[in-house]
Amino acid sequence: MHENNDILSLFRNKKCVNVCAPMVRYSKLAFRSLVRKYECDLCFTPMIIAESFLASPKARSSEFSTNKGDRPLVVQFAANNADDFARAAELVAPYCDGVDLNCGCPQRWAMKEGYGADLLARPECIRDMVLAVRNRVPRPLSVSAKLRLLPDLRRTVELCRSLERAGVSFLTVHARTPDQRHQPVDVAALRQLRESVALPLVANGDVRSLQGASRLQEATGCQGVMSARGLLANPALFSGQPRTPLDCVRRWVGLAARTGASYQSLHHHLVFMLEKVLGRDQRLRFNALKRRDQVLDFLQDELGVEVCGAPPEEAPEECSYSEGSYFAQAVCRARSPPPAEDYLDGACCLYA
Image 1 (cartoon, helix red, strand yellow):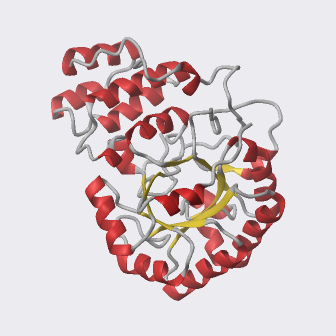
Image 2 (tube, rainbow, N blue to C red):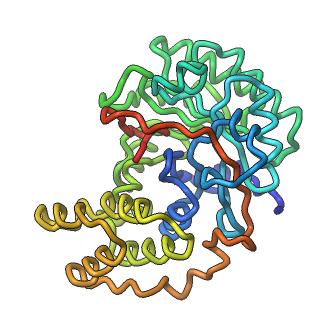
């Protein structure tokens, strides 16, 4: 256990807080450890289903792992009632610095079960969930929510003000409605929301570079920016790198090895990271690789990246899933990956 960091101090002390988004199966401990090396100030876990988290006393899973270096950290839950959200928050409170309620995931399975964007039609339920955590878990643990825009912006303003009164610490707003996919984010809506509440707002959507993050922050006045796809493609995005630097590739391979990440995780992240680094023929060959040794040989032969071990500054205790490490894990309901039309546009919904 540890003392909770005061996440709100980040917003008080920085003009713009750089945030790694909650990404299903991607924003896990190894990846969070990587982006923290490159000016990422705050990380979210992948979305965890609160009901399943509470119902699984038997085994650990990769849905929630952390360690002493993984700070500050927000654990995001999908919940459809106040009791589940509050009980899940109580369980993870000793191992994180904040909990977040997913109110934006537009996936059909999530909305069918009353999760994600389905909650936007029930603002009183969101308010009750925030209040439940506030009444049961002491500060400085933060309580936040990640929202999408409602078609009627006035209702979005009303929701944000209601949550502010309920004691929410900060809000993340993905500036698209649940029905929108690839439309440009609504900068004017973000600016109006920023002017309507006093609490910190994090802007989410289409953050693909440090310059883009700066433009979004300046245009909206939000105190933070969140990136998802941009960080997958370039974990060094917030440090100003235009594409994934080779030292980042080397670090990722070392972290993946030390954390026992699967080959699938190792390879999938590298597919994203190397998209702008490799030529077309190289990408085709790399994407077809099937084994870890093939990946290591490719990186060394094609890019001159020596990946025999992790960089010395990355101490094992800062990136370990071992039984002696500092962590909390819980088994979440097994779900089949959605079909090929799945997408990620700054929200929580990327499957692999």
